Picture 1 (tube, one colour):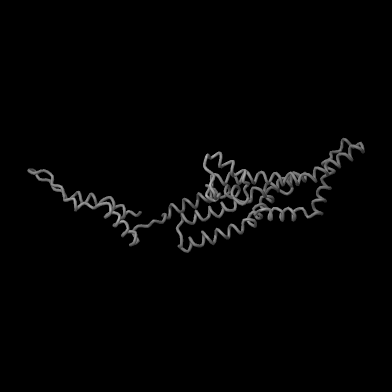
Picture 2 (cartoon, rainbow, N blue to C red):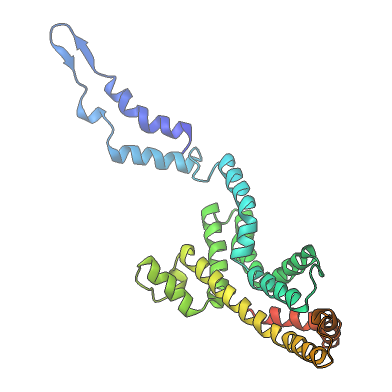
Length: 265
């Protein structure tokens, strides 16, 4: 509501009440009731101002800038908590730990690979958000509130496809609300933690399965060294080349990227 609209709404009753005059003999003379505008008159004036373009229901530019900078500040958290990034980075960290290499690949390389795999897996969702929210908003077909709701609905649909029903029911029970017939009606304060919990569990399950062949190699190498009497030789130093060779021969990085990409519904 612009300043002109507030002026119309607030000062018309005052202007009407200002029509009263005071007489030293008869006292104040109140204006007729018909001269005071009613609520319907004020509403009609506001509607007319809206039709004329004097009242803008869109958010002002400073508010939009504040929302934009807030979204940019929360972007890392949104990337980690509302996309496939969480599962991917957990699995990649497990792989590096299972190989036994301390800082190879470096953390920045793992994070970069996780980000690009996240963009690849989230591409259908991002295209849907772009077609349903961003492009209509840029074309002035919808307002900012509708665009934000469309974006949240697109991310919510992706998260619900990856979330286990047990995790979703857990947070619904903790929130003490009645489970809706359609899970898409749930708020983000329930869907996001349920999605993150489910992604943690899935990432740890994949990491444990990846650990098994490398642990077997460590056990075999340790048994051979023990039987050969080389108890002072660290088994990890001998098993590391074998684990690297096995991982390279089976095209481990390619299989891992393919499995992670196809693991999202």
